[in-house]
Image (tube, rainbow over all chains, first blue to last red; front, side, top):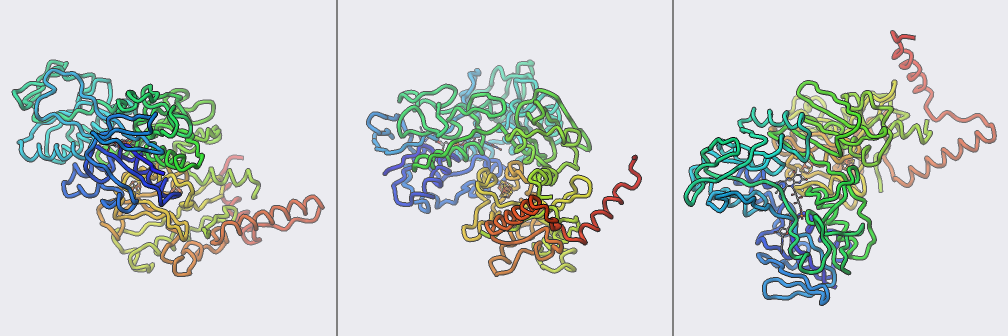
Length: 411
Length: 204
Ligand SMILES: Cc1cc2nc3c(=O)[nH]c(=O)nc-3n(C[C@H](O)[C@H](O)[C@H](O)COP(=O)(O)OP(=O)(O)OC[C@H]3O[C@@H](n4cnc5c(N)ncnc54)[C@H](O)[C@@H]3O)c2cc1C
Ligand code: SF4
Ligand code: SF4
């Protein structure tokens, strides 16, 4: 038996661990176009904070491949899958597989802006992106930077650059930062946090042209301002790397289409992580989930199914946590229906109820009860009894547990 | 598999377990010196007021499957196979909070750790008193609990016992035999007292 895994991101790594739980003997080949041990994308920010922390990004240790008895093929791209021959093509080489996992993640598409090809324009998605940012920071006298896109990766990039004493302006096309996570009111609160920490934020703004000779010099915005610019980080969103799937007969939509066992339309070919089209169990929305937790869970489930365990992926919500200058921002579910809110002492909580169950919530500057809300939401528990104080500090998991105990008539 | 189990009906909210836990996880492991340590040791078990006078000692339940392991981006959380304990490697933890927001029991808190650094928050949660249980001692909170709200034992044994008790009560009820009180007498007295005290000043 030979397992082949495309991509060494969170999903791929988690699949290897799942396979090895049941099968220590079979061959596993892992292919990545990046020539490094597996690293955690969520830790890139900590490396951007401090160059000495580079080794910390290798979350499973630099010896992962040895330890897991995996044959890595690094620095090489998979060009094509030939399902009819059960082969993949890597460069000129062809590799047979018995079971294949596509966990090739996504990449940042560069928008078509005039001047986008100049030097000094980066993405912040991979370890080599971060290495390149460091090289630029060291060799160029960087005073002013622009981050295009106010999503999770954009705000991480902004915070990282601020630590290097760079003036940072975040440019966001929509009317708020973190548009996928927050509504406008909460987005504005995050904007204030950014401003208090020295990050300039421009919403409802686009870059119209990047000026300079070879190297970026200034940037023209849609509000007609021109900003001096020494570097630009493009963080406009991640799209799944669907090329290899598309030219191999694997069904795709916004991502690879999989069944509840994370199998594609082709026998013995599975997919997991950012590359997959998932369904949000709360909002019902279909699309790539683009979340670390989802990548790990899907990777593990795909791995179990590849070794022959029948394990269903039951789906998840879009629960997301981001720390903006140490302030936790949490968002989960959908923001429609009856609203309850508690805004007090710099802590902001909003929750939406749908037929007596939690439909979604946003929390700023607190993590208290987030896990409890999440599990009550996912399990669609009737919370009408707690409605008046669920967001207050006195609400706690003990109440749920005591209630459960009472229902079992322990008392 | 052995585990700490909670009998909420026995908890009177005295917080002895919290103190014992904080001391056990301090650097000096001594109450008098622990209170002057920096960072100040915190408890990994949390006694929470719930309805009326009921309290609930909440802690990590060492779940399986384990949401916190599934999401940790730094690989800091693992399961010890021998004892089925979920452990956090404080050196590796970056304090991102992802484990906390998926924990259905809100069992993870953030505080600096004497093992790492005084100025960096890391994730804290119950470790079943790993050092103690691997040295044949019972967890500190269980040792401290005087009402039997916390116990330590084999999970299957506990379930079996609980079943037997429920079965017995049901049989007695059916046969109209007077049912034994499950809650100790003194606890009942304390409860009644606390209940009447909690109603002082309440509008009737
Ligand atoms: C800076 C940053 C911060 C983030 N912060 C958070 C956060 O706080 N919370 C959160 O939930 N999520 C966060 N994310 C998102 C999260 O990291 C991703 O959802 C997750 O990494 C997806 O894992 P994956 O394995 O599906 O894909 P990836 O991690 O993208 O891995 C895919 C791998 O496949 C390789 N590959 C691609 N194509 C090929 C090919 N043709 N041949 C060979 N190899 C190929 C790639 O090089 C890569 O190594 C963040 C992402 C970034 C970049
Ligand atoms: S920290 Fe929470 S999620 Fe993790 S094992 Fe403990 S109770 Fe379960
Ligand atoms: S806070 Fe620490 S233990 Fe928890 S998920 Fe983050 S790195 Fe892992």
